[in-house]
Structures are given as structure tokens and as C-alpha cells.
Image (tube, rainbow, N blue to C red):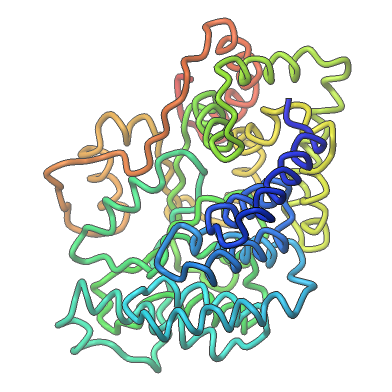
Length: 418
């Protein structure tokens, strides 16, 4: 089982490798990934920045750094001002030397926002949005781009993670009347102050032609009811789309996605984790942790406790536990839907999107008030392969989720047949 001790040992061994190969970008990046698993986002950011300084060419490291910077912001901000200053210097150089790498402007904007330099952060977000929209709709930009105009999103894809949001995003982004943001996931969860709202809205293309719609897709948003509360208050016209996948399959997918980072390839690890969870001496206390975790996500003060939650040995010893949190849909939807009228929410079943995408996309376009835009092919944009799970283990998980699924069906007045 993965424990804090195991992670610390893995980090120690990787740091020894770094002492031998001090200019190896991959080792820096791997250390960043390990600290990210520990929810030590400052240390993770440090190693990602060092990797970028060694190799400033476009890479997945920029996307990882973007995530850890956002996560720091979720859970209380960065306490190390030198880290942010170092990151700003590194990213300024990347932007200066490779102006075509649009995502580097997004990362620089995130660092500047962490510094409190909101005005400059906003300028980089808008620049990234401008250049992306210019590539896809040059005539529209020449005709309708207005930097003094603040564009609100028409709709958002807000969840759930590992439910096909990347595929849905790519289908929607292909529509000639839809303008996506320069980054798929903004992941900003605070919209309570005007400066936070301005920062969020600066990601969206400032096209004055209202026949074009704009959106973003942060599937983790669904886990933060506070974001929904702020959204419904300040951006009340925005619609939301929510994808729900069989919770057993969603949990398995997220679990194996995480194991890739840890380089754990045991085909039995998942089933051992499920057995450990369901046959523990005090399973009730574990599910009490789940309930408590869902409450952590509702306000800023409690959010600061989330990294500690993930470092709890009880959580780490039950390897599956962190990955089933997002599968108890009823917890989050009850918190979300109280803020939105039914006509502003579209709930889709992931299995339908995978199996009959044409029919589902027609439903989505009708919800958005757009003409249908059929594609020649519909690909799974973010596939994840993993070992088959035994029938016994799957039955155990189905039994675990059944009462929550029944509550969900009753609450939504929908049938999912999971």
C-alpha cells in the first residue's frame, strides 16, 4: 500500500538521483509529481520551475506547474514569496523567447496573480485569449474584439473529473459559433470579490458579437460548492453542464491515472485497496472522513485543511479512498443545484456521450440554443487503459455506491442503470 513512508522514501531516492544528475529535467519534473501527490504544492511548484529553467521548451511541465499554482491558491496561497518571484522571472523569459507558446502566458498570469499583480496577470490572460482566437477566427477578431469589453461565459462544463469532459470540450470547441478560453481549465474557485471576478473573466475572449458563445471546462469545479454559490450570485446568466459516469468506472479510471505517476503497475493493487477499505475494522469512521471532506469544500477556512486530509495515514493506507471521493455524486449535486434553476443545468450520462455522441451533442446544442454541428469522427480525447477488475471486486464497489446512486436518481428524477 502507498503510505507517507513509501512516498518519503521515493522522494529521497529521486533526490539522490538528482544529486548525481543535477541537470536532468525529467528528475526535477518527477519530484514535482511526487510532491503533488503529497499535496505539497509549494515544493512541487519549486521543482517544476527548476525543470522549466533547465528546459524552457513547451512541455507537460508547464501544465503541471499551472495546476500546482492553482491548487496553492485553493488551499491558502503560497507562503514563499521567493518561489513566486523565481517563477515569474523564469516565465517572463519563456514568454519573451517563445511568443508563440501561448500557454506560457497563462502560467505567467497565474504567477503574477499569486503576487497580487492582478492588472498584469489580466493582461497576459487577455493576450493569450486574443492570440488563440486570432488563429481560429481572424476576421471575427478584426471586427469584434474589444479590450474594454468584459465577456462573461455563456456556459461551463463543471464536472465530474474522469467523466469525459475533455471529449465534450473538444466537440464543443469545434463548433464555429463557440469560442473556448486559451486554457481548458481555469480552475478558479473564488469569485467573492470583484478583483477575483475580473481575473476570472479576463480568460474569456472579448468578442462583442453575442451570437458567439464562450466557455471553459474545469471538472474539479463540481467539488467546490463555494464556487457555485459565487457563480450563481455574480454570473447568474451562465449555464452549467455536468457529466456523470458510472461511479465504479470513474473511480477505477482515476485510481489508475494516479498510479501512473507513482509507477505502480501491480494488477492486484486496486482490488487490495478495495478490500482494505471495505473490510477495515472501522469502516464507518472512514466514511465519516468522506462526509467531513465534502464539508471541507464548502468554505475557504475549511479548504485549508484539505492537504492535511490527504496526508492522513488512514487515507493513504486505503489507496482507493482519495479516488472514490468524486464518485459520491449526491454529496456535491445537492450542494450545487440549490443555486441553479433547472433550465440552466444540463446533466448528461457519460456512457451516452461515449456510445451515441451525435445524439448527445444534439441535446447539448439545443440546450445552448445553437444549430447542430456534426463531426466526421468523435474520439475519446483522454483515454486511460487499466487492468480488468474482477467481478467480485466490481460487485463490492457496486454495493458500496448503490445507496448513493439511488439517492441521486431520486433527487434528480433520472435513471442511470448503474
